[in-house]
Image 1 (cartoon, rainbow, N blue to C red):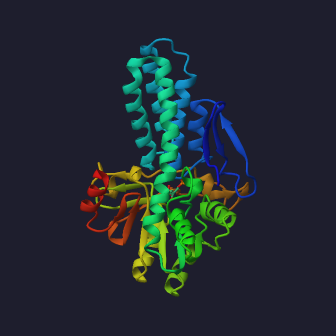
Image 2 (cartoon, rainbow, N blue to C red):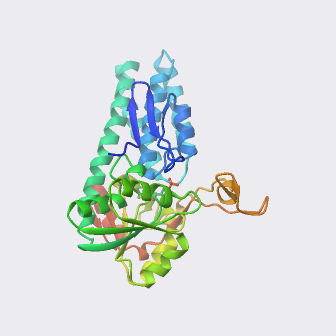
Image 3 (cartoon, helix red, strand yellow):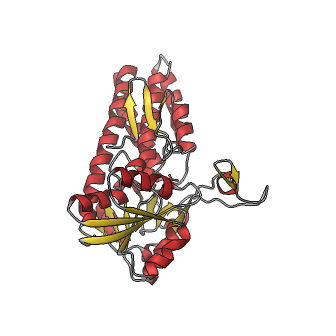
Length: 345
Ligand code: MRU
């Protein structure tokens, strides 16, 4: 199994996803600022994986904190949490994870500093295991939606690399393959960071699942030709009305899918729901460094200093979403009702 992130005695170990597929290199991050930087620079990425990294970062920060009094630790804990929160704004799993760590901190505090330290470490490890279990359930529910022989289009990477393991959208693919279905994945390359070309293709190849990489502007062609049976993507944040923030380009794929009568499924754990937001217009969209668009691996692609826009995510209105697959089951329109029910279970 692909190891994306792991808690160890010496620090948080992460596979450097910036280097894939050329190099498979693991680094050990020894304090919470290093973990924060790893999230910001996309050593680790993908909403659920960011959440686990955030939790482990907080646990590491408290483990390394020299405070000898509880009030000293309280102040340091606030700083650690805000350093982690300041890394990436869109994936709600990051904020969900920090809130969960805050509540564990509050519960363990009365038992003293060593108890707080071990409770936070235990919690972050538990979140890792829960995420893999959630993905397996997403896979089980989702694979029912997939025909026995299917060509599935996906965008970005919502696989083992984007989670603690197994994946959300690719979890559905894996579960369908495990159920004996004949699956071929079409992976959008996903400019500018190339999560599809570099990461989705890498992990599917490793599992022996057939995959064809296409450039983002080819998706409409294949959808129109009837070569795609369904689209399955992940999500970074889902608002109460079912609007979905996911990797930039997802919206275009969703519109093209609807235009061509092809189901568009979103696979995401409950930790990706943000029911405090009425709709997608409230979801903060991260704007990344223009250099990611201007150049690739040191090769300049645009005239020097060309003005560039680089929003990392877009919002797909829920009317384009056929179903949202969670670990608790499949939500369908009206999403304001079905997601609320799902979150309560
Ligand atoms: O910028 P990234 O690589 O973190 O964006 C990742 C995505 O948009 C994924 O589709 C999403 O986080 C779901 S991952 C299971």
